[in-house]
Image (cartoon, rainbow, N blue to C red; front, side, top):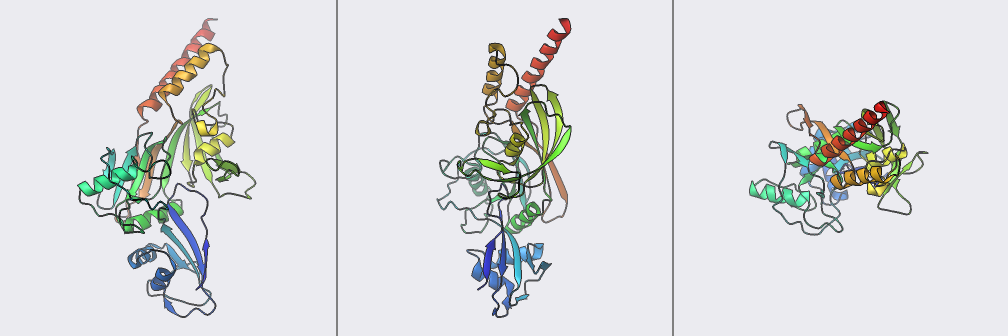
Length: 354
């Protein structure tokens, strides 16, 4: 039968599964597509063959063809789009979608803050997935065939209160191709974040493992010693310094859950108004009433973490063309930036006249 090793068990915003299978010492010769169909749950032959064609399946670290016959102790490595754990029925809902780009293979969306990407505990309806189901049905578009036949092609996800660009696959082939790009870290993803404090270095890299917190499973935790969690790498660059807060650009090399939020807190700069990671308190500046009122007003304008998925670039799975999309900061984010700029400017004017 062979031993199956799950190589990507830690949470990720990238919705793929990486597995290694070591064939039994007495394994009989059999085509690899049939071998994998027998051992992987609810994976079609077409999906396996697409994965082989794209290079998502390697044997002994080398690409193979669909007619390859597995041998004793072969080591098979594969990257495939993951299937959702939630088996509750998904219902189409007429929720508006901001479509940035669409063709026969892919769909690029600009997600507003407050919209949950996919159903889960406490969010069975009103999600982006429900909206996609409705959109696909209205346009008579096919849905992906996975462990359920009503699954839109989510390749990655962003948090409920994070705004910005999301990539959707419209075919099984596109889904597998894009999952491989995420796994290979060739997808371009840049975020803009407003963080607490004066980020002193103009740019830098955080290479710190991330995993579930041992006591609070709702939050992620940095493991700088690298003994737990999964590898996570974030490159950052200062865009604008506003004394008490800093606007930064973050480039994701990996895509762990809450990666930017955890890494920036690790640096001592939690995201502005990030309740889960302590950014919803006054962390920099005085506590006198006028300043506190100003910050509270900012929290009211931007009632979420200040994080926006601004850029998304990928190789089109069919044409091979590199495609790059940009998204403007949403109104709430822009409004808070304007308030901070005005506040810092007025303080400078007062200081100059004294």
